[in-house]
Image (cartoon, rainbow, N blue to C red):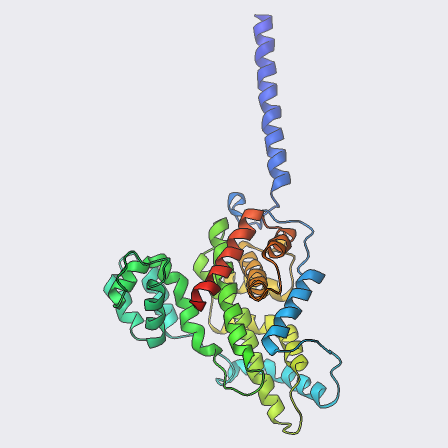
Length: 360
């Protein structure tokens, strides 16, 4: 009996040690999540990964060079160019009240969101909404005819079939991008490649943000996708504003560095103002505010991390598509910021496929 009792005590002690060991290993493997975030749903991040690094800054610079069609930077901004930059600073906060600069919330967006989230919505309801926006209808048909969705050799030639082919998830992934596309169109003039490159980067960022939310199951993928567009949208607003400031000085030739500096300084805050003007949720605005305040990714909430890693993936895949960055280096940079290799691969693949499918 004594031997049996001792054995029982030893077995209980052993099981407790095993449980403690398992808990300790889990603690080491996973970064503590934000208070409201379930531990099982968060992606482990590196505690000391900063918001930005020299490698990230170098990649951002390369993206700007591609967008503006320049090879070098000279950030010594003096004279009339400094005056333009100051006028942009003074006007950026007021731009939200001027329709020419600031994009109003697309009127169709909340109605589509409600219909997509309502389990009682019929396919006919969605078709009737989509047909109100010709550009959106065209995008739905185009995506439904993509090889990733088509189930037969016959082309999808009606919106009803397109909605049936894509399903709710396919439509949710398309809506925000398609509705906002017209905002990214700029008249020809200075730096003509900027709008096209920024639109491409916006789509890649949105796809990467959506992929992170889906892979980690930590945030709403559609909201992550929508927020992933706002950084590029803010840069478009600042581009328009800076062009107008240069028009006040007709004898001064615009410099790319003035545009870029205004985007670096004012872009994140302007993206937050767009979210606020669209009356997005407090959770969404907090996620964007984390980018403004440059929180380390390990200290962001799940939605903030979706935006952060989506922006990185979008930027890196723009470069990789032009052989200015290798895919291996892109994944290495993302894992260095705290992602698991599998998640880094997933969001890079999503951003890359987005660009490939659009080029087709």
